[in-house]
Amino acid sequence: MEPVYRQDYTHFEQHVEKFLHRAGWTVTNTHSNQPNYDLVIKKDKLVCAVQIKWLRNNVAAPQLLKFANFLDSNEGKKFNFGLFITTKGFGGPALALIRSWGKDAKIRCAIALENKLVGIDGVEYEDRVSDHKTESNKVYFGIFTCKGGVGKTTVAGHLAGAFALQGFNVALVDLDPEQNLQRLVGDGVFVPNPKGVGTSIEVFDGRDWHEEAARDSKIVICDCSPALERNPRQLIEKFHYCIIPTTLNPLGINKHGKVIKDTVKGIREINEQAHLFVLVNNFKDPGARRLQLLKNTYFETYQEVRQTDDKFHCIDPEEVCIRASDLLYYWGIHILENPENPSSQLAFDLIGGRCFPRDDFINLADYIERKAGLGILRGQQESEEISTTYADLSRGTV
Image 1 (cartoon, rainbow, N blue to C red):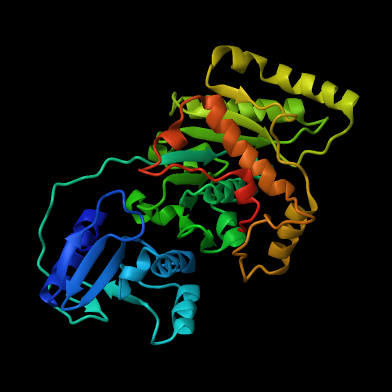
Image 2 (cartoon, rainbow, N blue to C red; image 1 turned 180 degrees about the vertical axis):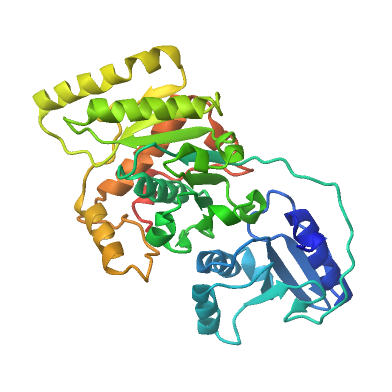
């Protein structure tokens, strides 16, 4: 049976604190809105920032990079070193990263076992149960359709990138049995920010997902299984937004429309509150006259749903869509050519000063915020305003 201290973050944090106290450190908890570290420990003249990662899987490289980036920031310079403590272990890329830093690195890593912290003097484990529970304040997205092959995984990964560029840490949860998300972006992506610590996109296998494994992530994006019943009901119930990708295929609009209407019906049987967005992916402009014909058919297909469900949004592709682009195409080719080496990049590189995929996904994130009218993303941002302009974003990379 799993030790008690691993059942949630609170128990694990208490377990780690006991180790540190018994090793002679004075331990201070940070404020709950401090995203970069969880504890401050002091001994003699040494001051250390501690990041605690309660995970059901191994630590990924982007999680370490984010903490290392913080330690190098102006705020992090007040600490003599940083201690990164986790529940299980470190994945291959994370171990390679640790080795590359060498013995003089400012970051030190440890695993909390039942009776000792590996890397710190071992002490006996004593359990103390706490009834304290934290209420979730995360924003949940589901990327879902009852049909495969419409770019669901590409949308999930790149929407995460758009939010990361705007200052949000994002958790990507792979619920699809094909596990394409993990093939596409590997362990995740670290997004540097020249003005601050940076943000991270962390990837979780749906079988190992637990909300407390991603305490730093404000946004959770689920790449759902095309079979509705294979997705955990408790996750579907949490969705604030659900994005349903489709294509503007002349011969497939009505056929896809039936599938999507079935998708909406299935989601609504579980979640009546989420805003649902139909998004045109892989869009190619056929010219003004043909586009108008396609749009008329597209809107007519969902007219009944739009009239009966005020939280259903059929996005006009001339306002927001994901355009077909060479960047997305060659990003996909790279994945096919390197199946054993998942990319830690997204298709957000600038070419000639522009990047259509990045523009499109930032536009999508902004559209969702405006159309839903809830202010949920900006309104829940903890003690921090996002003042980054699109000009600032154009200087960042993912």
